[in-house]
Length: 456
Image 1 (cartoon, helix red, strand yellow):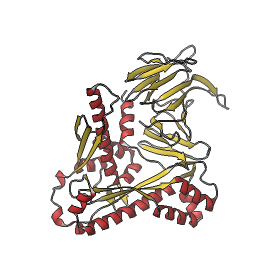
Image 2 (tube, one colour):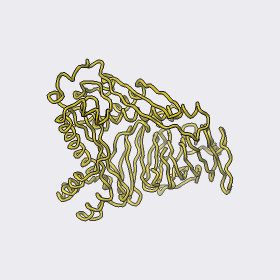
Image 3 (spheres, helix red, strand yellow):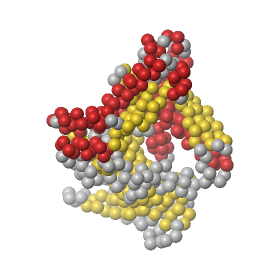
Image 4 (tube, one colour):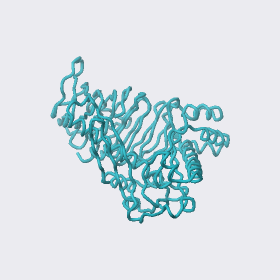
């Protein structure tokens, strides 16, 4: 999992306790290597189920490990692999200006990732996670927060209900993250703004002779390979871990490819998912249930995941008109062999134009404050629009992908440092300290992790 080099404070305000009652926080599950250290202690001890968790305790997990901690019967969190936390406070009372008393739990997340599960809490409670660059707050929800290896770039993903994410150092800059959505926050100097565009061959260019499959037999496929984790000494455990990761990676790639597909020239599947959480859940569920072929040997694990076009369209409740044959990623030489040069040139151009438009939309969607995005400033000053267009045209091409149906996709990236520097020259310091993205759809990995803790 992604590692963290900074402290995150997880503040959970539970329902007020009745007089004389106490809630026992404890470890309810340990998978793999887990350890605990008391306040002031220098030595770590093995963490086991039913072990109490108190203020000042530290907990950590190793590679391919996890630990579940229950705060009360309705609230818990999962510590993912390679994670270290410190319990800074447990049920400490905090009095608001109006006299209302809240009970707080503060947890410092030193590295790794936490997934939190809370039932809907009374009005007197609140839930916040404070990281190096962002604060996430919610009232009864299931969500995760992770910080990248640089110790700053933060992602918040929501599975249920919603959360508000605010940039630290920019108190007026916040975004509401809905069900099956995520946002990214990072200092402008390290922020990366990305978008994917797809080009689809027209029937005229593709040629009718290429369209051979009946609509009911069309499938979308994805493959992935993962190297074995040699730190796991038991061969079966090592193979199982590699197969699990390969399967997840294949499903993630499948989801990525489906999200880029076009409903019409201006609308992708991702656009639909962002507007409809229920549709996103249905598609995620269909992908999680898609047929998978997984194998492992000394070299690692391989996974192939296949879903039918009909299953995808049923989940979406919409047709994907551009799909006329089975879709799977192929190499550029294979693409050149299967399709004429004109098809390749035309489709790559269409993919890049689409990516330019989508990258510009991501930049325009940058949150300035609670009610304002960069797009609002563009209306006031068209020089910002010109600047963004220039940044987009010079964006870095991260990767090209070629598919068996003749479609092509490209990933573009614009550096946040350039966006901040060039916009600041024109409009002054409107962007603040950190980049806060507009909400986007969650990834398959987040869906699987958040769904697993909801079932506990």
